[in-house]
Length: 316
Image (cartoon, rainbow, N blue to C red; front, side, top):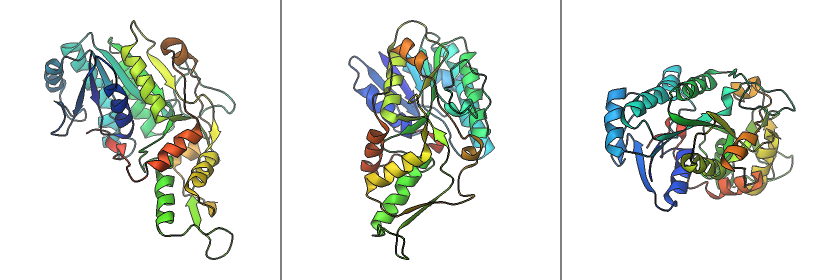
């Protein structure tokens, strides 16, 4: 089986590539802008014709699109998250219409959730910001493509190599900086270490990056048609404070954690609860998360000196 991975140089793309390389009887191809890529593509700027030519040469049985922007201006987010999937689908229809397409979407497409309720794939999306809106546009392009395609709406991924563009990676970087400076003094005195963050009252559905990679593998190789969208998350909402405190414990940090007004992200203020119903993924793929949040945090802290490139634009 020939599998082409786009965005293999990003955070989740790295985990996906590592997982797929271990599959027997599989020839893995990496696509991206890097000269070292097996297939040279740029979803943000290539025309459908250019991309179709590259895909025809690669002749993939499955394509996994991990490329995506999690930050940047409106142009960057739109080019990568919305235009990219649309161009990819157009090219696949021309060059490899029978290939299975697995596209990574985001739970941010749903927008604010209802406290105490898990959101299913049938929920009408209502993203709260530009990131979620552009990811939703990409999902709509894939779902309407007529291809053998599935979108995996990923919750909040945690694990080795998390970039500093999201909270787990940012807290890891701050803790590593504190540890490097020898500032782990505890207590309340003037010399006590302090970790200053934004409001941590939100609830999020955390999922281990390795579990995301396993879901991608199953989505790529499971025969027969799949539902157009599948939620991939931990299946429960946990306080963001629990993640931060757990990461601090793993790091051995005993100082103060200060929640400063105005220091958090806009999305955290707009979306206080996010939790996905993952029943459909279990039924369609036989998938369910295998790693606890503690295991994810252990892997994240252990990898702090070997972090992958930030996936603002997740491409090689």
